[in-house]
Amino acid sequence: MLISKFKAAASALTTKQSGDAAEDHALRYLQRAGLRLIERNYRTPGRGGGEIDLIMREPDGTTVFVEVRARQNTAHGGAAASISVTKQRRIVFAARHYLMRLREPPPCRFDVVVLEGRQVQWLRAAFNVT
Image 1: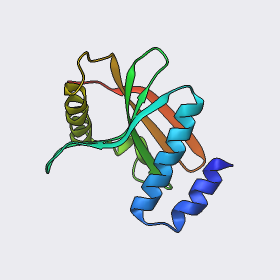
Image 2: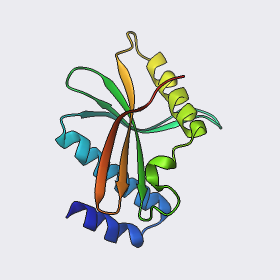
Image 3: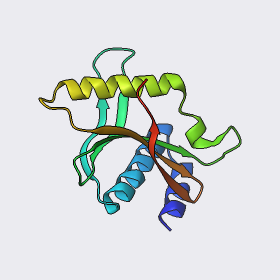
Image 4: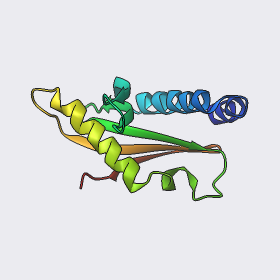
């Protein structure tokens, strides 16, 4: 039911508003799974940096950097396929910037939450730092 509300609301919204709605949905999904929000929409300073949609913490202390992708139509490969190598590098760059602020970096991973039509898919460890 939540997905249908998301889908109906997304059709009447701007791109920014529909992205925010997707992030809200992904956040609730992850919180129900036991993760805790640390920060939302973390951005590095300056142009050409990176942004992380959600920074979450697992109950075991692992920091999870989450990219949220939503697509109503999967005609061009779907939401997960839209995360290019360049986008991954920007997320990793932003994660490194975030971690530099910490005294002791925790274990980390990069996840993706995909919202496509009525389905939500949580891809744990979707990509690695290279």
